[in-house]
Length: 313
Ligand code: SF4
Image 1 (cartoon, protein in one colour):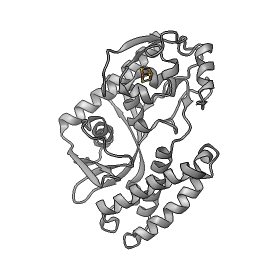
Image 2 (tube, rainbow, N blue to C red):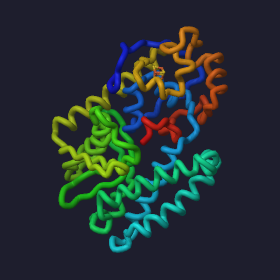
Image 3 (tube, rainbow, N blue to C red):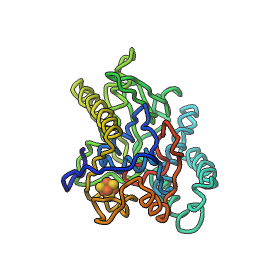
């Protein structure tokens, strides 16, 4: 496990009866979630527990959809005014959905709007979209690949091919200060590894755009970086499959436990916690306001819509 580790990892036995099967395809979000804490991944992806959407998640979805809509316009029409208009429509539509309904009123609505405004304004200070040469097929594109026998699936934000072949990931949350960006960079490098494994000429650079901070972070795509993320993909697949076989998942206590919705039932945090996956544990989780989104019969669980802030942006 990697990331903001503070304490030794702990192997936790779980009850598997209620759990679905892991996805056959791994996405960057899943890999990141598993590597931060395997037990949290299990609660989230295998048991299907979800948090209600946060203002940060809603704002992130709105801004991503807005930029997608903007880049579907002819280059001269990609103005701030048009982006603003798209965002108004996208925001209204999203907040009318039942699962986002609690964010459509009062302080929550203001929070969503403030975050989305900040990100969109920051974006226009970072780039001039009318000058970005991008094909429609390179916007919000599904990327599928098999790397050394392991299936990968993701959806990239944007790929531009001139003047350099570059994959871009929009970040609508603040850039973390004082911590390495390894996890963020790794997530976007997975796309480069997947694309470059095909007959495609190949991605030369990855880019993170931290919109509220108006900062771009770029890294070259060296063969060594591709090898490294491919190894992480394979290792993650191996570890997930082994945990499924053994019923033992690695919990990684860290500062992120303070933001973890499963802290009330996590054996590393509560001495009297019931066995994860047991009826007692499931009952406790349902009392915390979490929702269970998938049935136990699910055979492939896609990325959660409701991942907490620090895992979802
Ligand atoms: S509380 Fe910490 S150790 Fe427990 S599942 Fe959450 S992140 Fe993992």
